[in-house]
Length: 260
Ligand code: ADP
Ligand code: MG
Image (tube, rainbow, N blue to C red; front, top):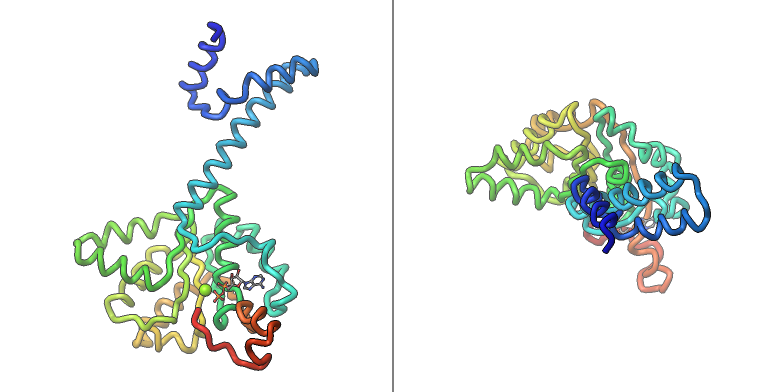
């Protein structure tokens, strides 16, 4: 290795440029072969580094988000689900709601794409540089219970308030006891006007009282969630049953009976 290469690598290490060491020689060779201006070379080198950093960031943030699967808006078949307004979803994907700390509620029966759309919006948020945390209400309640047993409820709450976007999946599949309902109320209150929440639920607002076994806490939570929010009501058929119907496994008129 030449002395200059050694010095260059040293600089890159000190500046924490992790990708450039692998590619600066190739970029320099190409620039020289094409007789590129110095500024073009500099631009290409910096672009390679910043692109690699961005890709790494997206990968790490996606891991941290704990999505159950990875799907984007482009994989959503809007023709299959006409009750979902594509324009509204594209607007949400522009993330102004996140900047305004507003919430998004995705409501509808099982299989209609609530979780898919929540993940798609979460992915857009990550690509734009935000932190996201996805959790089902069932897992969240377990986290609260464990934290209570370990006397770390406050720390758990602080962690859940931190991400720029919190996705609470499957509200309503599970009835919540008073402890879980109180924790959820605290979480929603602490994020209120500070950080967005996306909630998916199979229950319409009128039925939320049955989730919490307490209408007062249900309306207190709804009040905060809905104050600055967009609701997407999906009224359609389960996408999961689509192929089964096509194959004739289930009669076309079978109502949705599957779990989420
Ligand atoms: P739920 O409303 O129960 O949360 P999901 O979002 O998990 O349903 O959707 C179930 C499965 O069907 C997922 O694999 C999802 O990607 C797929 N899916 C649902 N709706 C659509 C759609 N309109 N276009 C493409 N895939 C869809
Ligand atoms: Mg779901």
